Image 1 (tube, one colour):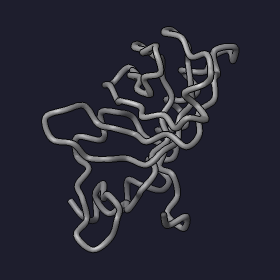
Image 2 (cartoon, rainbow, N blue to C red; image 1 turned 180 degrees about the horizontal axis):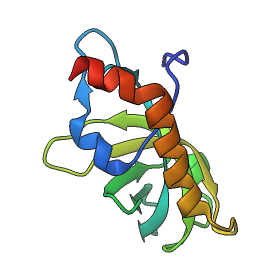
Image 3 (cartoon, one colour; image 1 turned 30 degrees about the vertical axis):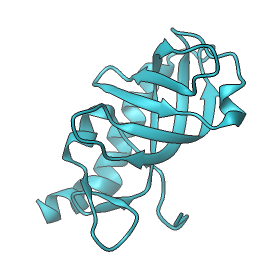
Length: 136
């Protein structure tokens, strides 16, 4: 993994425009090259019985979360608001997959969802929009 590529704060709906890159183990969103994506949203599907998959809804779409054993052991429940960072994998015909390497429950934080949308908008305007427009 190339840690010089920042985890991109994004919404699930933005993943529709993400494309694989031929020369690197990375994904491109316009001119923004990334391996890791950062999402926040509500867990809408939590499997039990040792299954390491969950579904996150951020209000714009869904992303499947693939959990390592470190996170699979935690007591995740549907309805929890969480922050996840992980490696994004493009899949055709299925919802996007994020192999999680950081996950934190934020359910107790007031105004968490509204603040997240503002953070994503701010990052997009300051950092990503010029690069995306340049390559569109």
